[in-house]
Length: 167
Image 1 (cartoon, rainbow, N blue to C red):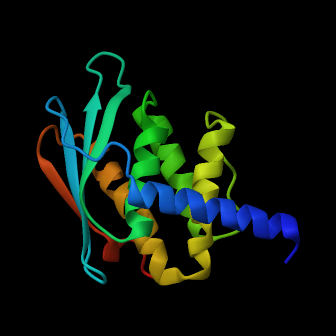
Image 2: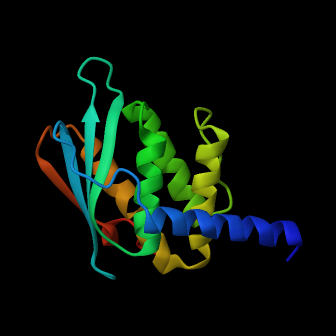
């Protein structure tokens, strides 16, 4: 491994540890109008994702989470909450698709609306593709976010990470 690759890996590990230890947006917003629970029965991680979608423009005005999970799932939820603010539901779906592909293959093409900081955060989690069981941890909050975006209003949706990460 080159020294640049090792430095990048170390930087990514620091980023994951920082978000895992000090998660951003870990709270329940009073004005959330969407929520969904994600559960990974393999490891017991559970996360509820809260969204506040703008009534007129459909922008994600706020996104937060509560729950318990490993460092990877907590860091991923924390990073997701920072990345999705002020995005549309369609953009959030594109980012989910990109992130899921990034975690499972080497052929992910980033959406044009992500900035370099967002791409770095998602790249930091891409190392999980070497450990398929950890893909479920990294994508748990994202699956819950996707369920929360479904037009179910205030109804609480629940997703099980077993249903998506079949391989």
